[in-house]
Length: 113
DNA sequence: TCTGTGACACCAC
DNA sequence: CGTGGTGCCACAG
Image 1 (cartoon, rainbow, N blue to C red):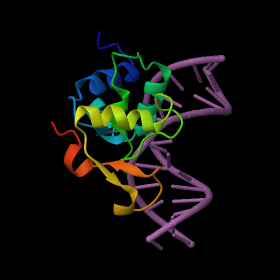
Image 2: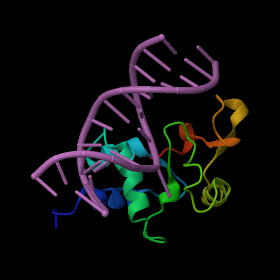
Image 3: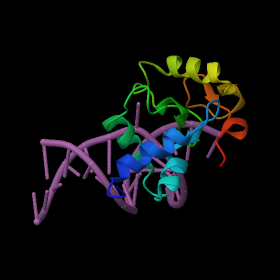
Image 4: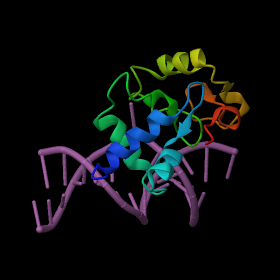
């Protein structure tokens, strides 16, 4: 049972993310029990995303952006999902560049236990 | 058994 | 301020 790999624990944390809220890889990693394993979190979701069970689209970068290219087929699709859940977005002009044009407002929608 | 790799995060220049 | 490189740890071959 607790024999579950780190990967499985990550899925449990991601599943805990409430709708309309987002969490960063680093936060998920911390909740999983490894603040330094942020990389592992992404690897875990990509290794076994279990579509429909794990809302990986609620997991974003520390900057509020998403994984370019590995999202559901486009960050645009993910943006639509998050917006539909009630997540607030901010234009890239509001913050440093780097994102495709928008970013999740972590200040308002970052999941807090 | 060991090596390589990887949806990140942080620091340095 | 922007970009690049490194570090971390666990899983897969």
